[in-house]
Length: 476
Image (cartoon, rainbow, N blue to C red; front, side, top):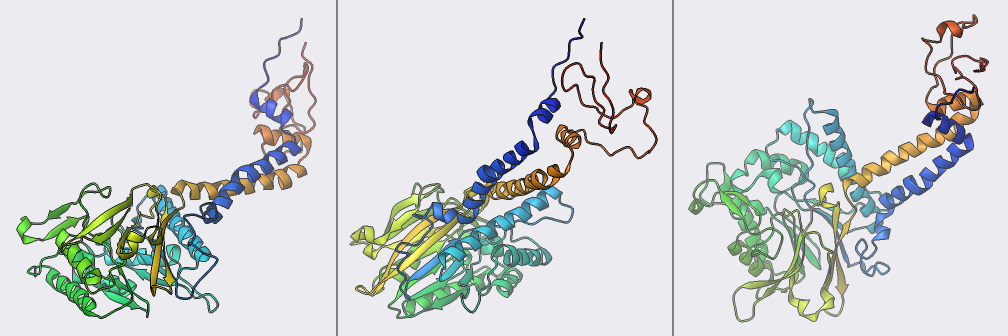
């Protein structure tokens, strides 16, 4: 009577089906249909979103055109020496993820200016030593700003944010000094014949002029004096205001509604936190730079609101105030052109950048000012170019490593193994060969032998792969 054979195990099925050629075919398929598409998207994703990730009329470049590449709130985190390996690996990956977005877009878009709209780091409370560590990461991993004689690097402007120097009452000299030593002044102007970019410290605008406890009053006076001087300049070109905290907007326009908190009673105006400037300060900025006697049009760039928001400010006829028209907010498709509507000709576009952090999709803003020789001014357009969540970057490199290893094994490793060793490798039972040159007694060591392969066919007993040349036994 024949003994009933047990069902074949997964290992036996693998060794029967996965020949060397099959393994090679699977390795190629994995590389072509998984790893390669991920790599193509990761390194050429602007090509797949050409309507949002390219300048309008990119084939024609007027030397007077402005091409501003904008990033909001990278907020890179830090880790102590005692942090877990997972935390350190996550920070390492996040740095290179942000750096990949920057380097890919700069190489493809050739911007004239790059602006990071504040909150470079995640906290203003870090020590000077940790601040220096993050500066090195910021400059060497993320915004690797290097040009050549043939292709000079665009002008990079790093704006201060509340997580870099603090909110109004928290802005102190030591935080300001270390920021300015590494990234430049808090308030300055980049001027050309046709335009000027006015950068200013908006965290101190709503601060108290009477607060001398932390020296806040001096920073408030500095920024207000600076802005008043720029308002008095008789400048006929286009003004671009660049700062961190957005202008005031009533509830329902953007994702966030107005929020202000204070250290003491509200009358003291000692700002603890704010998600936008006060309405009074916002009207003062709009009047001073774009009001009566001014060009009446321009752009305001800021960050702070991680969800992003796009509005157009217009002067209300017959009144002394400015109104606004909502365009886009939150996780929506940002695409805007001045010349699509003639009513936009005197509007002031305010771009609140959606954060470039992975959880928000790795966003970058593309602001182009196309020079119009007829009006002797700029026609602006804006769009948000999104890479995708951080997991895409991780998956690309992990899949590339797996594909490389699979192809090395399939095309270099397996062809050099004999059939028995190949089957053992695929089944996962390959072990070091027996070092003794003496004959190995199979029966005496049957109980203590290493894992063996199940029967392959017919009435054969298991073959012990530890024995080179072992003969199978017949089973009655």
